[in-house]
Length: 382
Image (cartoon, rainbow, N blue to C red; front, side):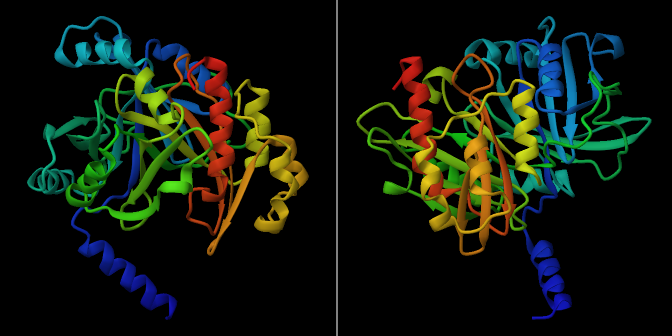
């Protein structure tokens, strides 16, 4: 197949996609103190504050800070004084769940068409398509409900060149941006749902957003001596937006999904994977800034080279930094996971460096979940 033919076929596939997406637009968090959260993600994650909305520019009810690193965009919102249904929802969300993700916003070429398709195919609409404008242009927004209190805002921003959305003003960085980005994009966002609900939500993404099933991990794929879970991955046709979905499975003790559901108070976003092109430099920088990562026993690395083969990073460096490696038929990946970034054992992050592999580290599941179980045991939750 020639390169031209392949490009034409990809173009035809995008044209035929009933729910085309351009990528992740933003991960939006409801937090108790957005100002402090913005400072943490600026200093610890190396993100850059680019936009702000609050009392100083007309938002009397909420304060929101927009941070970016390459194509990854996080928005942190807290309530100043709830007066509307939205403000009360945010306040109640933080009270019930702690700091957590309320919105996995997806950029689409046509928000009206995407919303109409989603609702026609079973989605519950939250906000119908509407325009918001300022001197930078027009954005069309709509939103639909997904698992728990999470939503997907559909963002059409082709006619907009502002820092984020109308109502947000450009903001100066909190600290000087790092010399190099720690990460460049959002690789995938993982949701935890209740026992027996995973297939229901997989079907939701298949039907409502036209996503296809990418990977499936069941049974011994994700199990240790004590706990287990099941996971399926859905993605859009271009694989730019990937949503793994987890549910607990029967085990001798409480799984990490059970722990999350208990402390989060229901289903929600468990972790966000961030794509980096130099995981070694990123881990060193984030460790130095105070980010804590899960530990991996030295024994994991004793035989790693035998089944992973050669990677860009020597095994001894992987051992030093506790970075995991995995290989499949398409290539290999390097990955590491933070500990929860708030007091509740809920939301955490993954750093991932891909070299051909489009997998999710199946060969690391046992080591990863044993590491999580060690942390659960420390908390008395295993």
